[in-house]
Image (cartoon, rainbow, N blue to C red; front, side):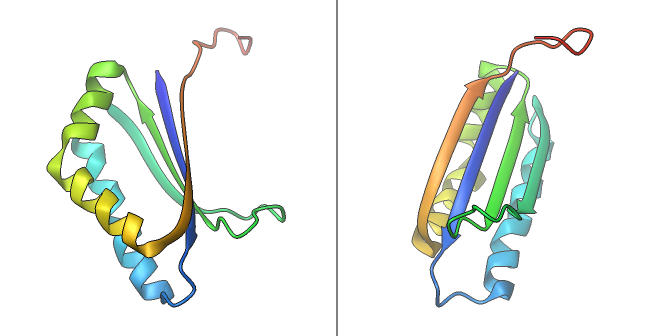
Length: 103
């Protein structure tokens, strides 16, 4: 399984309504075959350093990840977010299979 995480720090001039509108669009990617879960949430850590939004994807395999990456809706949304964010951090990794609570 693949995991993708984005941490976003928004430009100061944006309203919460503008941010909420763009974030709601991420949920459409649950429709893509192999995208197991999409979570959009507020980063409530006291150490967030201004990265207030988390976007979390769980993706079945590399083929599904490629479908997500190639999706024109995702490409358009990524461009829109790039214009709205002050800075972002992307994290991508292969999650090990967990059996019996152990790695």
